[in-house]
Every structure is written in structure tokens, then in C-alpha cells.
Image (cartoon, rainbow over all chains, first blue to last red):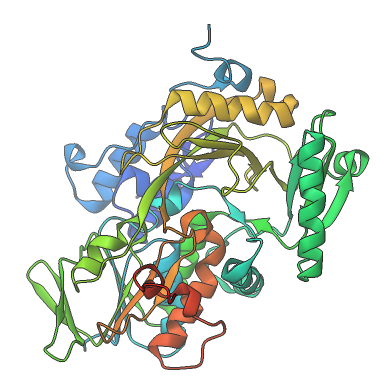
Length: 93
Length: 381
């Protein structure tokens, strides 16, 4: 990895750098979910919409797995941020 | 060199066992079939909470104290905050119940303070004006369960423990004398004299390998996570404990408000319990009811965004208390399972008790009420 890439922001919501993600992989993380638990990458407002693919690529590169072998991260509802007031009345008549 | 003890399960309870066992000088191998904190420990609330009475009170009081001494030593910060738990009353009847509880617990020596409406809002300005008062438990707190698990795991590694993730225990070999001889992981045989079953909601399948029946069911609990907010809530706010449902329907769905802000600023909203097997899918109806409940107590959260919801499985025994035991049927087999919604709170005392049992030391607490046999022994007439 080029020295300059270390400070590259991969997850902008949680401000997680490429260097921090690579460190988590050195700690044993082998999937996007594990990287998330170690670094919070993908835990922010956009829930990984921006960084998920980038994290997958870094995991693939650093662990020598093929990108299609990387376990995809879990997607959880709601798929985009929703006001609690709206969430509290969803499905009601 | 073969391990002195094999811990099965890499959640907060298993890693705590590994931490204490390696601290006692034993050679520890921890097996986790997935990743660390990939089950219930990453799908739960964040409370370090008391239980009102019985062995639960002894366990939680001892464990909360242990958390305070251990947290600063862990190489990953578990973000422990002793911010207390505040039970809120929105009806006169509930207020009277809280006052009764306060008197009982006061007599039992558990620190708690009854607050009137004004005192509640002085402490938590964002609580609804409709709240009549509350019961505050200053010893309770919260932490970040995933980081706490990583903290135990890394500290155990530093003490010489070996952690193998992605490795499933497939069998346990018991000799003719009824003692543990080895653990199998597929084709590999790992000789050892002791096994700790800390597989959480999946503990039953491990215990069955040695012919024991652990009466434990998964109870599903939902959480909604909000976007990060500036600091607005100090204490964890609750209306009831998981044992006193606000409402209960035919599917066994129980709901109650539980709201806590994490150090990152996200607000975690719970809580629900449902017995629906191992299904972890998010139920929109439960999420809606939980959110509605929460807004009654903290209306300012109305315009805040939910970014994520998830559900996890709490390992529940018939009397809601964990099994921390060395059943006499199998020498060298130890159980640390069935913590329900209190695994985060009780992890340290569980690890410590297991370590004392494995090394043959006197235990910090009496183990009678935590024995597996309490579910099988016919009570004397």
C-alpha cells in the first residue's frame, strides 16, 4: 500500500481510513461485517452504501480472496434513514 | 501442546471465560464457528443492569463491580459508562409500583433513588413532561458489547490464549469414566481435560454432545438504531424490566420502552421479546410498536432518523437465570449459558466463576441456584 493511501477515507460517515481497515484485517477480519465490527466502517448514516464495495475490494486484496468469495455485508431495514415519527406509524390506517 | 481447557463460543461470555481462565494460568483454546461477537453479542442492547432479587441480584451486583475494574485494563475500550438506569412512570399506578420496588430494594441494600417529575427532568431534560417520576439506579451503566468482546479476546490472547474463529466444535469425546478427553473440530482431535460450553443460544447443541439436556430457548429481541446525535441522554431509560411486559399477545410478544445513547451518539431503541425459534428477521410491526412506545417517553426523538434495525436471540432458561455449572454427570464439562438479556452485564462474573470452578478454587458466589440440575431435579415434597 502506498503511504498516501493509508489516510484515505473509505467510510465517510464514520471517518474510517484505509489504514484502519487494513489493520482490522491484520487482526483477523475476513468479511465486510467483521471489518464493520472492528472499525465501524458502514455503521454510519448511509449504512455502507458508499463504502461497502470499497471495503469488499480491500478485504479481497488483503486476504487474497476473489471479490465474489467475500461474504456480503448484512443489509438491515430501513434501507434509507426514516424519521422515528414515520416509523412509529408505518402500516397504520 | 494440548490446551488445559477449550472454550466453545466467541461471544461476550466465552471471551470472558477465556480471559479469566488464561488469567488463572491455564492454557486456553477458544473455538468460535463464525467470527467473534457474530451472534447475540452484536445484536443486543448495551445495558449493564441490575436484577432485583435472588441469585440474579448477587450476579449482577458482583459483575457490575467487576466491569468497573476490568474495563480500564482491556486493550480494546469497552466504552463503559456508569450513567445509571432510570425507570420511568407515566401512570400513577406505575409510580406506586416503583415506590414499592424502591422500598424493597432499599431494605435489601441496593442503591436506588426515587425521583419526582422535576428531579427526573433535571437529570434527563429530554424526557416527556408526561412522566410522573422515576426510579434511578446509579450503579447501572452501559457499554459497547462488540468492543467489550474484542477487549476480552485480545486480553486473553495477550495472556497466551489461542483463538480460532471459523472453527466449529463437531464433537466432544468422553471416556469410559465419564470424563472429557477431547474436542473434535471436523477431522481434528484436540485432547483436553476441560470444555466450557459458552455457545449462548446454541449451547444446547454443544451440551447434547455429552448427553446433557440444557433447557434453553431463543427469545428474539429487536433494536432500532438512530443516526448519531449530540449528547442528549445520560442514563438508560426504561419503563419496565424484561420480566414485566407492558403488553403480551398470543405470539408471546412483549414490549417495553428502553432507550440508551451510546458514546458514538447513536440512540438504541428497544425492547421486545418474542419466542419464534431461530428466526432473526426484522418484524416491521414490532419495530413500529417499539418506536411508538419510545416516543411517548422521549418525544423529541420524533424528527430523528432511524438508520438501522436488527433482531438478536437471547438465550432464555425457564427461570430467566443463567446456568453456570459443572454437572456431575460429565467430569470436565462446564456450562456458562442461558444469560437471557443479561449476558453483557453478567459476562465478567460468569468468566470468573467458571475459572474458579475449572481450577478448583472456592467460588465468589454460591452455585446452587445456577446448577443445571435445578431444572431436572424433582423438588422434595
